[in-house]
Length: 96
Image 1 (cartoon, rainbow, N blue to C red):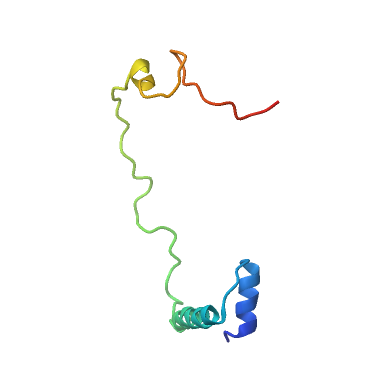
Image 2: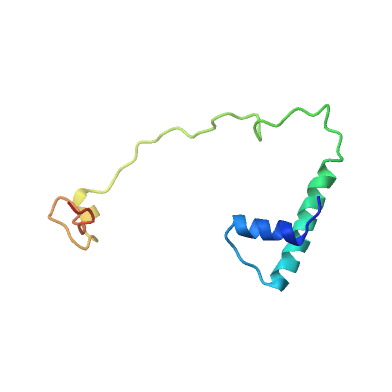
């Protein structure tokens, strides 16, 4: 695949970016390296390689739930900037 000014301008337009001339040259070099890497991967013979579905054989490795203590309502409200004694008070954000 050829990386030219038209391709860089198209990518810049699609991503809503603008590049200076120096940035376009740097971007072109980076794109050529990335495309070269992908083309190098295409040279591999992968006919007998099964597609990778998961990174390991493990499925849903989760820890068991443990019941632990919690803080009281009074402790939770201690550092609140405003409370009514039972709930946190917050500024109104929805208008009718």
